[in-house]
Length: 370
Image (cartoon, rainbow, N blue to C red):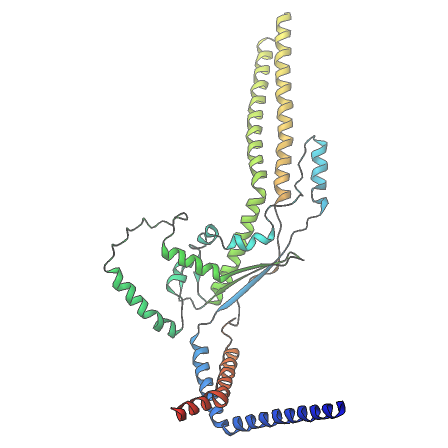
């Protein structure tokens, strides 16, 4: 009995597989019979894809690569030895830095960093555009034709609503980072979207890229953003050391002045009392000499501290190695015309097959029932 049931189940499964194969063959024949429709749709997709691909403005990308600075323990070895001989402690400058490379993208996308780039002069490769970055992003950006068509009703609506609104007060023309206008905020957002910073967590290599519609402007802005980022990091890391240096320089000037005054007092007193042998004279002479020696000792110590402060600023100033400098790109990064064309043809093929297998029969059956 069990053998008969197994035989019957095997026969049923074989029949099911044969039916599936028959259904697939029928579907394939059905699609093949409508191959002209598929080719027609794909041909239309090629035309539409070419129109779209050539309507999208070209974007050029320039990238630079920065290698991290070495953080060896011996970075302050020589300076530390000199400081120890002078009795000065430079501190643990080789410790952890609060400004890690992972914060570089946040720094570049911050509003203060972006608005400092607005007034940078830029020039297009053909020489037709020579203006500031803000004006370039505001007035010289190309967009696809359908963007103009879609935005036209909204612009017309905004113009109509502006007739019934009070005109905003005109500013003094100065950029206020604390209170940006809507146009300035939009330009800052557009600029932030065009700047990309990525950091490799394993190697620490930083890659900075800028996307612009002109190759020369793209390379110019990439180099500028790189320099601005380096200056920002350098200012951050050397801020305390430079403040200490300024304070030490002030102490040095005061100690130098006091020493010169004490030296002049001592010399004047000696010159005015050369033949005097009184004990009071000798006492005053020793006092002035001690003041001069004390002033000289303080002056000498502060001079050593000044040299160490200068050495510390120089030592903790980060050094960047530009692995890949900025160069003017020769080819556009986007749009990728072949990929757009392939995407349109693929979608047209899938849509035509779906129409043949499902939608066409569904509409025919619905009409027959109706």
